[in-house]
Image (cartoon, rainbow over all chains, first blue to last red; front, side, top):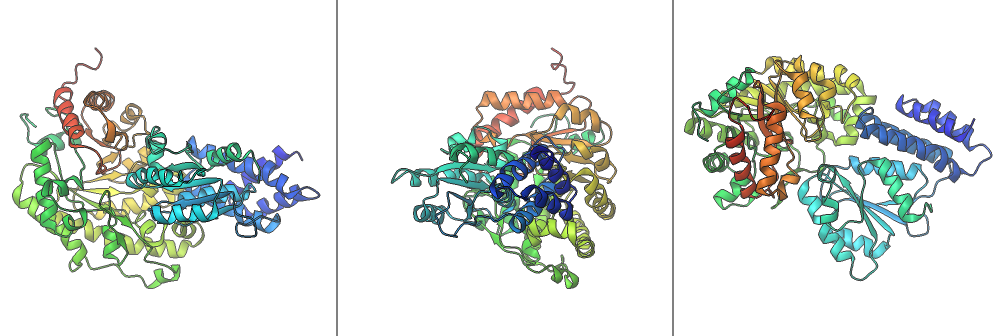
Length: 213
Length: 348
């Protein structure tokens, strides 16, 4: 079976919440192959398509969440997986700034990790001060910030400004409802990009890191 | 606003899918009243009298067509014992979930609406508004039994429960329905004219239409049937086109529309069944010029006002604190100018 067919089969199993089917598909794909290549060629395309389908309204957030959760679980079982904190400093970090709704972060973390990226989870309800300090300590290459409400989205400006000194600062990708509803807001707060969903997050991280896992 | 009809008459006529003298405008401002009173947000929300005074001053200022007795979104979660985090520049947010182990649901009991000091503040606001205003609809609010668990459990744990623990999910819905009905009816008894039924989890943005028909739809049918007054369902920026015919079967009178929705298409789908409320983009509204505000108001009126059954409002059910007074004035002025029936400028 070609990688694309396997990705389609994996996608169907995730949307049906068929853990056994998804696991079987991934085990077959991983046989005799580099596990990172499987994450890139099977898991990432499946999750990207599911994210795109959420964007065009044919898949719900609940399905997207469950698909990501199942994928993350199976990938951690089936594929030897790089985890943040295992040694090297993570290239990627993610936080929910000030807000306490963590679902958006969870969706993006699941998608990135299942695609083979190590991402440090800085948690939710994180203050500007704490986020800046974590970034200064860890020096991630890319920082993903999720927000729910407009006031928190506006505080990204402060994060970006404070991280700029001393240079270089991490590249900042923002997401969440305020950025979906106002397509100009990411520029206003000084971010480097915005993603409308977890699928876009994978694409942006691929671009910013050159795809290096 | 000037006009032959009172705000209440105007709203009732449009809810009856007829054209009143002009398009009703609901400026759903929950926080701006604090500025009017010179108070911080937490202090403002600490007394129902503050909220009532703020609402009355805002209506005096902008001349819109409702008084909004909602305090903040996590009020009900707070009444259940949940954490609420206030901030100076925006809406109070729900903190850590109050249910940390789903097994707690088995013995969960709702708060007593009659004795809850948290809910008493909102009821007091409603009472004062009712005493001081007689021709303006007072709009209360409830978080639907199907959406409240996001604050009770957290979003992820709630989705896990919905998909994997159906027994506990059903038990939670039963408990929440009892609370929601009691809370809605208490607001109506205190003087609310109608109740906003906030149900973002039912939106196809969050659950599939198939899942909705098995869950949130049935919950809404059962709950709304027991609420002793009109309701309008609001998906708080979530989409609703995919379930609009189902929503019409829940017994609700209107529906709040997202800025991301095609308002004209939704009007065609809902005509005669559901009044539409929306759908000005509250996030971009923050930096609108007066000309932009006028253009946005005109576009919404052109899309949905002909024939009645339309109330102009924001898309979320709460206008951000950052939206300046000048923009709110511009929206109100544009509604006065372009919202007069018949809407005969559209084809031109």
